[in-house]
Image 1 (cartoon, rainbow, N blue to C red):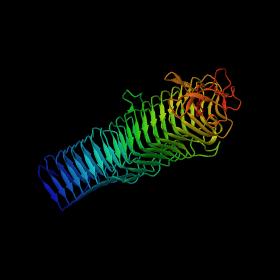
Image 2: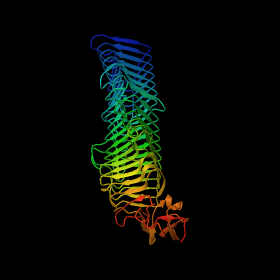
Image 3: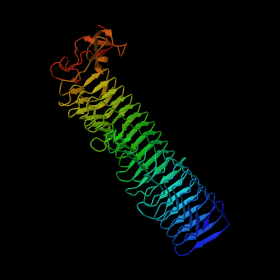
Length: 531
């Protein structure tokens, strides 16, 4: 045992028998170990206790039953170019030692953690390796626990044989910058590439694969996932998973997280899943699934998605919104690629579970959708869909509202490509508003079917009516004339006369707008023809 300050151990080899540590430094400060090997059966190989500013360089510590290298109460210590190896305990442990560094070093454990930090703030781990080799459900590669705030993990290779690579359950503001490194698991249930339940966690520049969940933010607030790819092929696995238990305002929330420049992929589950992930921002990112949904938003309010992609090959929907309000999706591509009706054709967007006051605008929404359509709303009310291109890929419907999908607004959308009808409103869906939409390329019998008959197909702007663009009016099949120019489309007129005015199948049997209830019509359909 070494006591006191400024001691140096160099170019040596130590072997401990019985319960002793091979090297023990106790008390003092600025002690150094360099180019030294230490081995112990029952004690730690290298143990520095109450010794701040300890430096361990180009050395190796190996223990069967205790830690390879452990520093306790050693603020400002440094482990450089060294290795700590243990069969049953920590490879390298830094406990209650703030402002310490681990550089170019390797922590290896068979059944415990490769590297562990506890009660150690402002630690930097860089260009290192942290790994668990054999087993144990808590045998993480890197473990950051209580009071380890503002830790930085940079360009470090982290792995675990049967558990999670990085597990953070104590320490706000932890930053993991993989700098392009890969983090690969063994495709086991209950494992995470990176798990955190701590505020302000940052994950960036990582390539994560073969865990059940690539990244799991568990009740994390103000976290960031940046320039990262997280893939999973495990059943029900999620690429990027943000989970909260509360309502956006309590202690159990997951709120104000950011996903940017990143991709979450799942073979069978969700590419990106927000479950009570309030105020989440997703930009320039992709959620992709083979047979699940690309992006799912559940019980998550005030979410913003922009310039992103939600995609599924054979799943139910590319984007799912359930029991969520005040979410905004803009300038994004939402695509279900399945082409076989009744087999694998999903919707581009599905909204349900009493989701309300959400806005989807300037998006490309595509999906054959089986009987559901490219955009399917069930119990989704008071939502706004504006300036989107909605393509049904030749499925039965493009837009379908059912089960009290009420009070929604469709404004300025291009709606195309269906076998039966571009829009289908069932008898329970009422008080929906449609204007400035372009109904084009129908394959089947109707542009729109309004079973309820008490939806509105035009509005009033600047004191006059503004309706929709119906292609059979545009090509002159149904005659509608107008005297004054449309506010939204100045090259067109809002209709006010003609044999096909007002526009519905009651006024003109040729009209492909099936709404037979009294008063149900477009009273200001847009037309290129002047009175």
